[in-house]
Length: 133
Image (cartoon, rainbow, N blue to C red):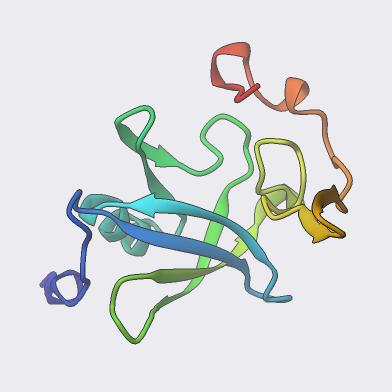
């Protein structure tokens, strides 16, 4: 039944990197980690569920912010050690900083330059105990 999970080359911590991409544009929204349970639940519930290393528990994307990632397609790379989730990002914000993508800085002339605007103030998205500031 879960043979598809056995095909994955989990790291020494039992995790696999998971990259979320917008299913329409292909833009990389974020990277997080999944354990076996998170990946299984993601496939079952058709929404992104990650493993929070800092909290030591499953994290349903959008559980605090409402910015759920609806799964459209799940892909596994050639080495079976990275998964890609093609998602619909509800609310258009994937990053805890209030931006569309966590990849909002570009290397330019020896420095990281912020190139994407904050779409929503993170202080209005999260309760104080869930903010990353």
